[in-house]
Image (cartoon, rainbow, N blue to C red; front, side):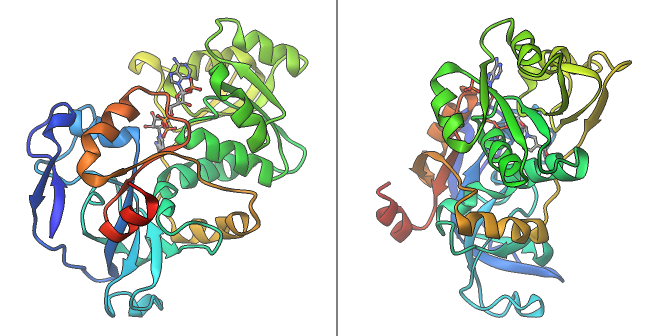
Length: 317
Ligand SMILES: NC(=O)c1ccc[n+]([C@@H]2O[C@H](COP(=O)([O-])OP(=O)(O)OC[C@H]3O[C@@H](n4cnc5c(N)ncnc54)[C@H](OP(=O)(O)O)[C@@H]3O)[C@@H](O)[C@H]2O)c1
């Protein structure tokens, strides 16, 4: 099979299309023919060496594709069934990938079978933060920082689907986008006083915060009232401690692969309350261009690599 391989750490130019060994599914794993792969900042952290990784490796942490043969039979996945999921942080920029059966799910009818690859990591991380960490429910106010990125745009929609009132932050060009996704208020996080604006909107500060970008950590602390809980899948600025820990409860967490949580979100995709916004679809030989774009740090929604040639033609890439 063909796969994008990184054999030495570096810039986007180290992404190389090569012949690679077919992955072999182990016990409990399903072999998937990959249609498309999501692109996220973690792909660039691994490629450049800011996250540890063993070389050589194939980037890509989430995929959409079809089950191969009877490899999913034990878990009732059928030959050719459209599935999506995340096997971990690597392996998806490839024509085939293996994935533990409990980390994938059928693609909901309301989600495009190619665009689905851009969903798993960011949507699962958003759901986990809002539900398991923050316990968001109907009528709660929640601040979602960086609401227009991959993680943020799912968080805004999921919080709305849970019945919360959303205050989000974004650059001005994304404000209309976030209002369309359901944010009641959108604050410009390019302005130094954005935390004061959030405080003014919430009579003295928010109680629940979902962080969706590292540069917003210190501002989120300033926007939060004493006793607030802050869910953060990103580390503190400068590898230090989270700010104001004496008056705030910081919960650093990592999004977990979960087919059952993908299934939990399926009704939202089906009824239109959750959708993936694809900023750009690229053919997978353009992976370097996708990495350059994600490294700009201002993607609206998600970037997608289409691997299957027929789907690429259908998607016009
Ligand atoms: N631990 C986990 O499980 C996990 C899972 C998923 C993601 N993450 C992490 O979460 C972060 C976001 O991921 P993503 O996929 O959403 O990335 P992304 O799609 O590249 O989005 C980046 C976001 O950051 C915002 N941003 C950029 N510079 C900013 C600044 N100076 N101040 C405020 N906001 C700024 C952008 O907003 P504007 O364009 O509106 O300015 C955009 O919304 C990454 O660090 C990623 O690694 C962690």
